[in-house]
Amino acid sequence: MKVKNWQLLSIYHAGHETNNGNIWSMGSPFFYIYAIFPYAVGYFKQEYSYYTYEPSVETALESAYEFWTKSENSSYISQGRYMRNFYDIITELKSSNNRYYYFYIDNYGQQPESVWDKYSCYTYYHEIPFDINGVDNTYMYNGYYKVYDARVWLSKWKIHEDILTINSDKQSLRIKWAIWLTVVLLAIIIPLIVMEKKKQKLQSESLYDKLKRLCNPSNFIKNYDKEKVDAANEIYQRLLQTSPDDKELMDEIQKQAVERLKISLIEPSLLNELRKKVNPQNFMKNYDAEKVSLANDLYARLSKDNLTYNEFIEIQELSKQL
Image (tube, rainbow, N blue to C red; front, top):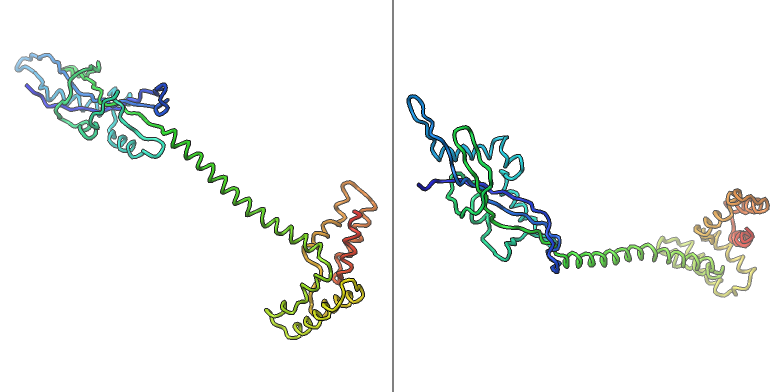
C-alpha cells in the first residue's frame, strides 16, 4: 500500500573547506541541506478483551510529525537540526548576496534543481520523492509504535568570497581616501600659505606703498563719502608727486591721511602678533630681568590708543632685542 508521507528539511553547517590551488574557494564555509522523512513504521498488535488495537500508519506518521516539530523532547529541535523558519533563512541567505560574498550550490560538479524550487518544506503528507540512501538512526516511540527516520542529502552550499573584487575595491578606496585627504590638506594648507604670504607682504610693505594702497580715492567710492573722496584725491595726488625718500613730507602725508581719512596705517594682525611677542609673560619662566623690563615698556607703548605708525615701526625694531 502506498502511504502519504511528510518531510522535514534541515541545514547542517559542516565547517570550512580549503581547495588547494583555487583561491576562489580557499577557506570557504559550507553547509549541507538534508531532507528528513520517515521510512518505516513498526508496532505490535495489542490484544484486549473486547478488541484488537492496531494503529494505522497514517496515525503513526502524524504522531511522529507532531513530536519532531513541536515536542520539547524532539532531538531535531534541541540539536538545532530542524527549524520552522527554514525558508526564511534560505531566503535571507539568498538575498544577502553582494559584490563580495554569495551563496552557490557545489554538489561536486553536479547542479541539481534548487531544493526550495522543487520541494516543499516540512509539508504534511507529501509523496517521498527520494530513494532512501541513508538512515538517520532516529525514531519516535510512544509505547505503541515506532516511526524510523531516514536522511537524504539534497545539496551542498558554499559561501564564495570574491578576493579579486575585494582587493580591487580596497585599492579603489585607498585611492579615493588619498585624493580626499589631499583635497582636505590642500584646503587647509593653501589658505595658510596665502595668509602667510599676505602677512609677509604687509611686513615688507614700505610706508610709501602702504599710503598708495590706503589713500587711493577708489577706496571711498563704495561707501560713498564726498569729503573723504576729496581728501583722498588731494592726498593721493600729493603722494605721487613726493619721493619715498623724503622723510619729512612722508611723515606729513601720513598724518594727514590718518586725520582726514580716519584710516589706520597699522595692520591689526601685525599689531596682535607684535603684542604676543613683547608680552612680559614670555620671559617669566626662564626669568630674564632685562628682557622683562624691555618687554614691559614695549607692551605698554603698544597698548596706547593713539599709537602712531612711526612708533609701531620703532617698537618692531626694538622687539628684535627680545
